[in-house]
Image: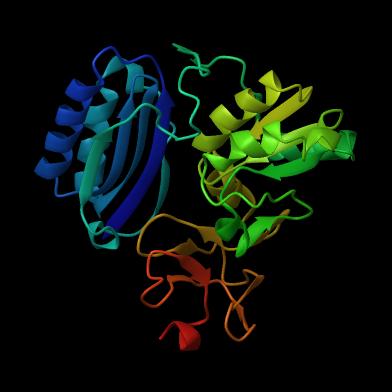
Length: 278
């Protein structure tokens, strides 16, 4: 039986390249595939493999003091859901393009939004009905799943968010409670801090992201649709009753499938039903 794990840790790392070499060796020894990004700010991991191999990898990773408290999200999958193992060092573990704007200490990102559990999100919305969800993912991800009433930007990459915020397009939200969310929470650690430095007064982040919310409420809460994931599965449902809110770009049929467009556009993603994708 296989599993895919998703986690991140924001912590100062003095030697990211040494962490890269160690993580690659650890994954190779356990037959894992996936994607790991290391920077001076921390680590961001999505890897999959045989369940016992994944557990061995996690035990070894948590022996490193900075990663001991990693909050791991589990889902069904396998090493075969990834084309290869990629372990790289970059300026940021999520590329907003502002590495020098982000400050990290032993407690994580400084100045980020307050963390809310899924239950605390519901409590906040009951107390402050003017609160709004703000999607911290790329627009294509939101096409197949998002929180009810969420603000979805036209961002094509994570780098687009800073320019969109600086444009003033979302200044009307600066006096409202804003709940940022993304797949596993890592993008919102940075996004919420970026928003706060730009004058958004009351910013929160969904702790553990959509993945943790889905574990808690499935399709019985405020989430609608499927969760986009960055591997060959492309999307994950939280129950058999998940809504199909995506619309095929070719025929308009309801679908939760995301696929590569045919050549010469095969580096572009689109929401496509099974018939049109084939």
